[in-house]
Length: 340
Image (tube, rainbow, N blue to C red; front, side, top):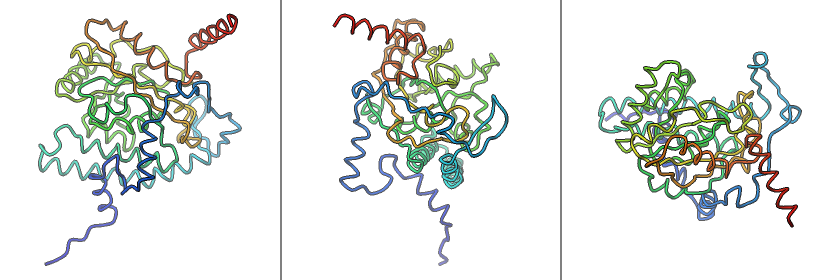
């Protein structure tokens, strides 16, 4: 009988499909303790570290390559070259893993009905990529609830960097679907993941597209699959929380599922908007805080927006607060000092 020959890349890609996100390798007790520490770290407010900023000056970034012209120019520095190398190595493996899962699903459509295994390849890639670029985030808050399965809900997070997507994938382990702009379908790997995983891609200039996406989102929620959205509707150019787009909570109110806010800290400092890749390591800087669910029953979208905004800001670094919020915080502090 002839032996089947499998290339090393195909073998590694297949292994990724069964590689659990919480157990990349057989862990020693010390490694297990480190992982528990990552998941149970105190929040930024509890550690008193909301006033820290990791934004680098242009001189500290020290760009080596500049592509395009202002205001759309993109830069790559020395650390960015490292991230580029990691992407060139891991990207093709991720694409092959998605291809293999897709082919298996064609043979047996019931094998992966919600595309959980297909999406799982992206979550594994995100953790590997962040690990190899020394950018694994710390996590705090209601993490155990996510591990046990939150059930149908709407996750919402502030959006300050391209890095937000892989960072969020480190904590959102159960299957979920992104609500994203349809332009992302053209991005290598990420576009393949979004399209193949049947995520919700919306054209904000097309009313029919918005209606189709609404129906699709409601359908996913009714089938028990959570959604993930950025209520600002776009990346903040300076990392500060912007106003929310209208209608972002409509799917949650329609299905009466809870909203789970997630504060993401310092991604704009690690990978600013003018950088093609991260400009510095994120370890010890990047942080995620999962808040308690907010019920939607009997609440208007305006009320939900205020609750979500307050929750996000409560665990975001101060340099990501809007100017008026930052000023009011300083005024409160000055008032407290004056009364001492």
